[in-house]
Image 1: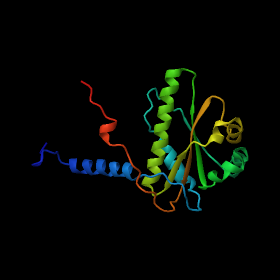
Image 2: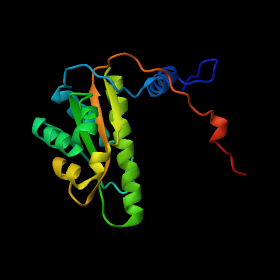
Image 3: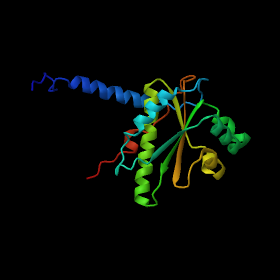
Image 4: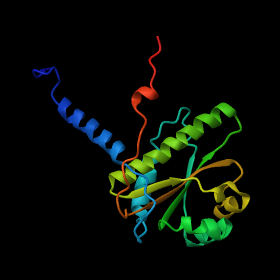
Length: 188
């Protein structure tokens, strides 16, 4: 196969551009806390949740569960949250509860929780790629029995996040990030 003067194979430039676009997608994603008034269309939600199933999953247990909250469930969750916390649930018209099924085996559960977190991040990146705003929250109410009952979260599942989705209102600032040197170590 022929190479150009840089040593790259034909077609490599397209791959480099895809990698750079992916890096830009990761670096430009922001947590949004203010959303437009319209819900995300069901088809778009399904596209995002379909992407989630491609998250790394060591034993292919597919432990993630996503529940899109409808108006009745949302009202029950607001009641469970109480007047102090309920307004924060109203930030976006589309809320998706993310949870992980548990087996009771500590090693398997740890792997599955990590896989579910990757699935959630995949949803966030997919939303951003589509021009949507997203917010991964862990509201206290969903760690209570009243909150779990409100959304029908069974005992064998661990709540990992409530994803707010919608159109962006404004652009959050770029957050400070620790430099690579503070968290990377090369071992001998």
